[in-house]
Length: 122
Image (tube, rainbow, N blue to C red):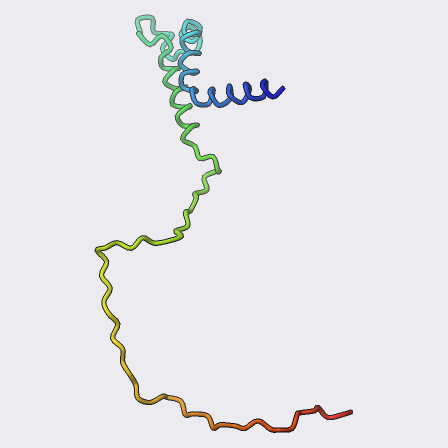
């Protein structure tokens, strides 16, 4: 049972990988029928198309299907976790401006009361 599942999975992956080959192979096998029924130039007897217009359409449809995004057109955004620093980048030193005083007045020092606060009794 596991072997059958593995073979089925392998066939599905290979069919997706060789989808263009499958389209061309299908065309080669059915070229006479395609030229007689599906060809756009079947009414023109001296045309050298022989169903190749149908093959071009199928190949274009296959390309379009492969090029379509799988997530419904939503784009993925990558998150940059780190930024590589290049050697060409130069860092200028910061200039420090020392101020001799503070803009705020120092708060007066308060001493803690020795007594423990108890809320009033009701």
